[in-house]
Length: 426
Ligand SMILES: *Cc1c(COP(=O)(O)O)cnc(C)c1O
Image 1 (cartoon, rainbow, N blue to C red):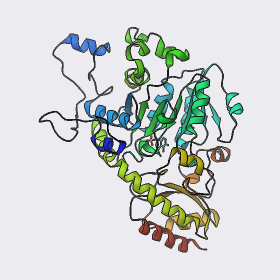
Image 2 (cartoon, protein in one colour; image 1 turned 60 degrees about the vertical axis):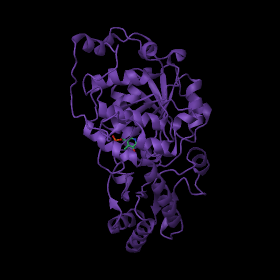
Image 3 (spheres, rainbow, N blue to C red; image 1 turned 45 degrees about the vertical axis):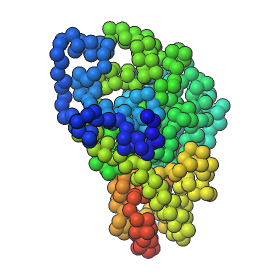
Image 4 (spheres, rainbow, N blue to C red; image 1 turned 135 degrees about the vertical axis):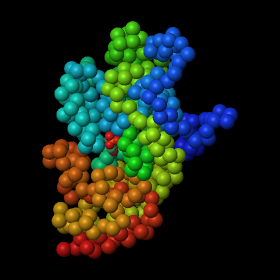
């Protein structure tokens, strides 16, 4: 029986058998018991399915992975201890020292650091592209060591919408996959596999959990990329020494990429999510579809309020008709584009600080994308490690306020903003 995405939020991943608990149990166990040493040996050799150690897999975690895989329309998923771990492993799974990859520059600041600084120390080079570059300019950045293309469906915090079909086409004509960070859109608003993306990752810390209680990440494999045909990925198509010569594409077929990520990278890096955290994530996922609907409808109302406010210099929200992202948003995000809006306040940095300090309902936090309305000044917080040049390449201006519209009553949110604008007047 196949259900629609909002039904799968609730019903996906865990189907109890006769007499079993109705709610996903928390298997708070690091260890699993076997009747024979042989069976355990087969598990180690990846000859049979099953759990052997919670660093690699666990039944609670597996149920959440199956749910998210179903929501995205993938062949398999792997949850990680954070979104950062998911970004690192999604890329490192198919990239080694001496190789490079192409990434949109309009991405999360933490990802920019990971790519430009930390991965550089691993011998992996990122080549940033901006959304205004032509195909020819992007093509020129590829060489025989380029392994993938990376971008965010809705960029945090630039709110640019990724032209998924375009970047998938560019990636595919160079024989490499497109990896998409779908954190802000969630599979409720966009399923990048439907537009040609090959791998999707998320920070589940944001809307998927939705309650700001658990840090986590996930990687989902579409199963669509043909690693063997590409010929560029010996780590998937040639024997893995650490498993007595397993060839992932031969033994695991469409799930080669995600299986390798688990049995090799998760085994070696150990960025494992905890079963209790995944239980909480699952509670968040159950209401994801209804929450996203409310985030989106509230955000449209707030964006229109901001647009008409005399103290607002500019508003960036892709659903606004005069947004330069509107056409892309209509194509990729027909039902809404998330609850995050950015805007510039007149009066510069001082006005921004007075405005933020005067908010009562909207809290100043580092987090975004949960049930509570919150607000942040990226230039002085999340993105403060970036140079001015990097800041602008990431799509951030010094006067930018990032507003994460929650699921409260929209009139209360707007009244709070209104009184803070009054206080912000010099
Ligand atoms: C927050 C975020 C990350 C990093 O995730 P963590 O769970 O904080 O490690 C990655 N990508 C995007 C788009 C994010 O918003």
